[in-house]
Each structure stands twice: as structure tokens, then as C-alpha cells.
Image (cartoon, rainbow, N blue to C red; front, side, top):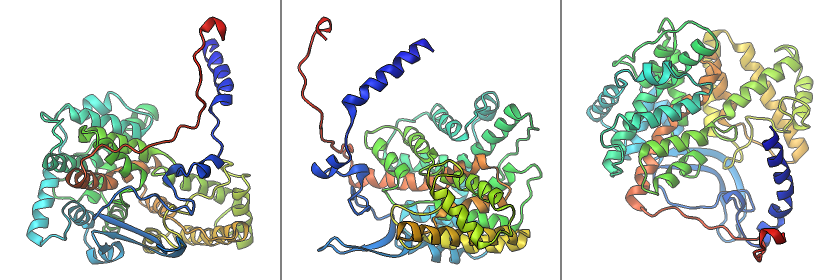
Length: 448
């Protein structure tokens, strides 16, 4: 503690030497956070994988106009892809094929692809016992990073970064992560919460969504609706363009020539943050506070507006002044994933007798948007995190697994962009920063 107190003194003194005023970014024409002044992202690459559309930008004037959001996978509207799967539990696998290979598969191609994924479900011998059960982790995202790096040791050609090898290794990880996530959770609750431990093997006839529910649940049972809902969420989280933080992280790390296990580990670390993948947990925790303040689902609209205002004023939850689940870096009018999930939530709420909870969510959504419009003079679209957590709640998925589930879906996007960058760029990513400190003359220690 004495040494740490010295560090605190050094840190306090260092503020005089490290300050970078916000105005300098404009003066030096430097893009803070890789954002333009209008909030749009600085374009740093080209891709043919995913398009995230949230605004129109006039190339001559630079004026940005908000439009209803659209998400395209390889040119296909994700809403049409979700509708197209109908009652299938394998919509996510079809999206994986599309993102990785660039086209929608014929039935024989799709069957072969699913067969390959199923062959990769099985984990190496003693992997669960040695790496998960004997070494439980308090945070599952950290444990996923550790597990991915451990799988490196089971790969006899782990450092091979050839495009085809990257694809094969990526699909292998895609197939294994759902089971690893569930096993890491079971290990945690057994060790730290003293709960009963059960381990189920993945079923080679199940889809990824079905397997997640089967491996997670003690009785391994699930309904058709539950499997379809989880499959839909995985589809919607599969990719979100090359500029989202975890995918950009993957490509940046990959550009150094390192192995895919290291790149995926880095992406998981990025997705863990509450400003990225961890936001779905933040929303659920916030909604617990909202419900408590509302004193029940029957609260008036006036009460919900008051609570939204208190959140903005920093009086509730984490006192950040944020209402989680609203606003997006790209979408300006609406997030298509949230629009789809709202409809999914309504269907599941009817089956699960949760319509009271669903109506409460919708009414708070409307109240929050109205208050933000009044206070800030602009609208903030509901984003995917507002409803994804509610889907997981109705599926009885523990909150510890919300963000690992995001990993299970988004890894296909990471692999697709990793491969694309290897094929068509190949250079190490190396953006520049501008030095704004003073030039100093060295002084001997006795003269300082």
C-alpha cells in the first residue's frame, strides 16, 4: 500500500504534463476516436462483407441526413434473411456460410457446411476438466480468452496464417465456443456459488442455437420457439461491418501476421467492454433499477418519464447520465436489429406469459425517447442491446452468458473480415498520431 501511495502521487503530478485539451483535435485536424466532427466514423478500409446504413451523406456539402437503419450481409437485407429462415433453427449457420463465402448456399452445400461445423463441436480430450473445471474464472469473457489461447496448444500448425487455414481454424472456434461458454459458466457457479455441476456433450444433430440451450440446461430441453428466438439473435449479432471495435481489433491484430487464436482473444477483450458487447448486461441491470423505481409493471407513463429524466440527470443506476440501450454510432433513426427483436420479444412474451414485462419495456422505451428528445433536442434510436437482454431473460439464460453469447455469434464476422483483409490488403495497420507535447532538454537527476 505504501508503494501504491507513491504511484498515486506520481500520477497526480503527471497530469500537469499529459493534458490534451479537446480543442486541439480541431486545431490539428486530428480525428478523435476515429470519428469525424459530425459523429460519423472515419473510413479506414473497404469491405464486401457487411454494410451498416444509418444516414445519407452529401459528398459535396458533407451534410448528414438520418434515415431508417438497414443492415446488409453480402448485399442481403438482414430482415429478409431472418424472414427467409421461417421455422428453421439453422438460420445462423446459413448466415455464417453467407458471410464467409459470399453467397447463399444450395441445399447440398449447406448440408456439407453444417456437417463440418458438427464435426468440430467436440472439444479435445480432457480440455474441459483441465482448463475449465480445475481453473474456474470469475469473469466468463476472460475465461473465453484463456480457453481460445489454450486451443492454440492443441493445434499442431497453430501459427499458419494462410487464408484457407485461417478459415478452417475460425470455423473450428465457431463450433466450439458455445459449449466452452456453457462449461465455463457451469464451472463458475459450481466453484463460486456452490451450485450443482452438470456437463452435457454437444449433440451432433443440433444447430448451434439448439446446442447452446441443450448444453446449458440441466434437462437439456427447449421449445421450438426458444430455439428459433436464439437462432435469430445469433443471426442479428453475426456481423456489423468492419468498423465496429471488436472486428476492427481483429483485423488490426491479424495484420501483424499473428495467429487467429491471438486475434480472436483480442476481439473478445474488446467485446467485453460495456461500450460494446457488454452493453446488453448494462441494459438489464438498468431495467432492474427502473422496475424498482416504478414499483411494478403498472407504473404510469408519467412515472416512467420521471425515471428516464433521473437517469439522464445521473441520479439513478450508475450515475453516468446515460440511458443504456439507446443511441448508436451509425444508426440515427432506427436500429434494424432492435426493430426485429421487438417483434420477436412480443411473440415469445405471448408464449411465455410475459406480456406484462414486454409492455413495460415498450412503454419505458417510448418514455425514454420522449425525454431524450425534449432534453437533448434530438432522437436516439433504440439499439439492439435494449431487447437482446430481454430475449435472454425469457430464455432463462444467466446474465453471465449474455456477452459470451455475443462472442459465439460475432466470431464469424471476425473471421470473415480477417480473411478478407488477408486477401485484399495484407499490410500491417499502422495509423498515425500527432505529437503535441513540448521538446525537452535532458537534465541530470541531481539537477532536477
